[in-house]
Length: 138
Image (cartoon, rainbow, N blue to C red; front, side):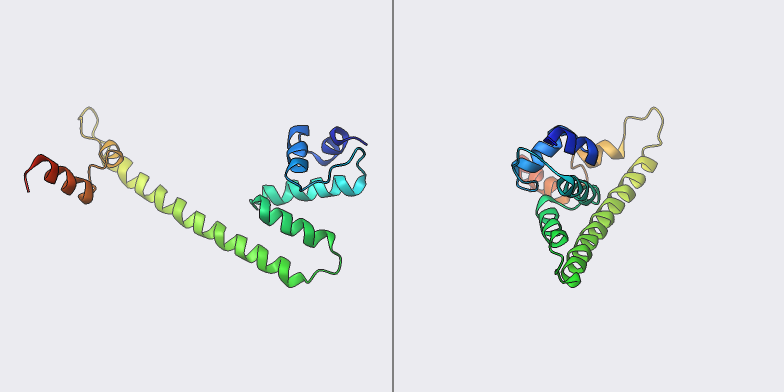
């Protein structure tokens, strides 16, 4: 089958399958078989789980090696899970900051808005200090 058919059967776009081929995740071939369809499915799932290209390549290599040590796969997955937990913590901190800012912005028609003040470095002491120095007030 051609790459378009392999992509269709794997549930990926032709553009994405060609991209995977261009970056070496999928081999260059004139004709693709079931194993390639399974590889495309594997790549699609790994990417959906958030693995970056290098991790996906490592997982794909391990998946294709039937004598692989399972510990390597587990280490890679655990490292990825740790990265996800770190991103979640950062996103939760951002959400908390936004929640606090939006609660402070419930002032109706008043011009003061903590969201805009924060976005404009209004509460950044380092910025205020440098602005004070520039204006000659220090």
